[in-house]
Image (tube, rainbow, N blue to C red):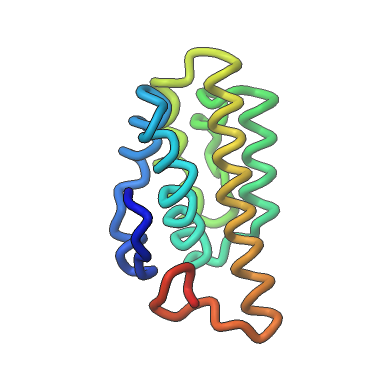
Length: 139
């Protein structure tokens, strides 16, 4: 993606599973996009489902300890039916490209980036900020 500002709706329209697959397979600008716009888009989707930042961070630890493929087979990688389906989409996209510890670490770090963006939005909203509007990062 470019350095242009995107609205929440534009970010939500991104195909995060494709960004995960390309980011793992090709690295470079694809990985940069995954950790930038992709992490923000994933955090927005998780936020809309009421997912807590610590749940996404914990999923990152599960990936780090057991691997992406194992995490992809969990019946409920995030609490709640819709959130679990969202996480299974992410992990399902990552699993074919996660052939070892290095790739699992990349997936875990991406999940931590998603959790960090989600935490920032939650804290900003709780502090009276306007996280949830239509502007970049919900501003």
